[in-house]
Amino acid sequence: MKYSYIARQPILDSDRKTFGYELLFRDGPKNTFPEIDPDKATSRLLSDHFLSTHYQTLGNHVGFVNFPYQSLVNLVPTLFPSDSLVVEVLEDCEPTSELLDAIKKMATQGYRIALDDFVPSKEWQPFLPYVSFIKFDIRIVPIAKAGIFISKLRGSKIKFLAEKVETYDEFEQAKKAGFDYFQGYFFSKPEIIQRKALQPTFLTIVQLCKEIAKEEIDYKELESLIARDLSLSYKLLTFVNASAIVSSKIQSFKQALVYLGEQRLRQFISLVAIASTDSSKPNYLYGLSIQRARFCQLAWCKSGQRSDADLAFLTGMFSLLDCLLDQPLESIVELIPIDEAVKLALTKGEGALGKILSLSKAYEHADWEQVSELGISLELSDEVLSQCYDEALQWSADLLQVDI
Image (tube, rainbow, N blue to C red):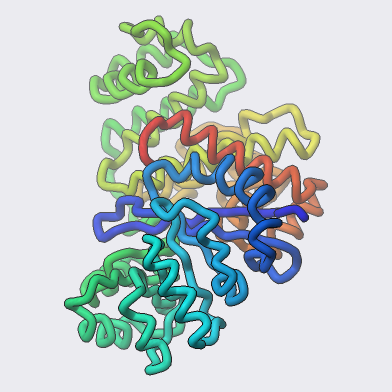
């Protein structure tokens, strides 16, 4: 038995800070969590994927995991630590007495239960005392209708989560309706897309991006750019000194250049520059930038295209600049004299770099059909893609050394 894909999607609180992740498993064509005997599940599932990689990248956050009916009644979730797991009851589960007994047992053992894609009905009423989360798919149950149900349970311990929140307006409406948590890609879309005057800090960031996009880095120019912005200089030195690869304190930017080397420097500057754009943005967005950049770089190399790996990294990194700067991506890339292939990948999704970027986005959204199609066209196997994603998650967590 093998698990081809595991992806994670962030769950944010009302302040847009990361509360947890939904971990999405694919096991064969049905894309479901495997219905397997607990004894057989233990060695493979826990050691190979769930504990070895994804619990590390969860950090202090919880993991929401879908379990089908048979896995629930077999108490498969009890194989996992209760403190970092939320057990999601799939929407197609029948509310039988057998299931209720299983939910009671798990709740008594300290497991938090979530009802996924919930549609209110009297059959689920007996389950509510044992439930910690109710998830509403706002495409199925409109926000206003969900709000009525939420108001009826206002005094309970249940927290409510809105799924498929795709716009900032929907996020605001869901907050007003009483939702506590939010899942969807509203956080990675610009709240306002408009042409506005470029601020000095933004211009410095653009120049930095221009320099690190060059085949050969001009260290003197980089030092000059950093020196112009006290805040950026401070953030860079603080970040470098906090990294695991620094054994003695770095006190000047020149030292950082020498110590880190070209490849690491390129990646560190990418992260620090992007993280300096807007402190009001969700922290997860910065982590996603780095994760996507690394995934693109790894997948690019694994597809046999060893050259231009830095371009793949920058394609992933720059793909979220519009969200971080609230500027149209087309306008941003015009200001940065980067390779034409990167521009076409970012603005039109064209070329090999465009395919790699689309593959990264599909994986993030757990669009497994798209992942398979792109993987085949790029000659990347399921195992290689899974490895690239796992490595990108771990690499970004290590690099950031903060909760993302």
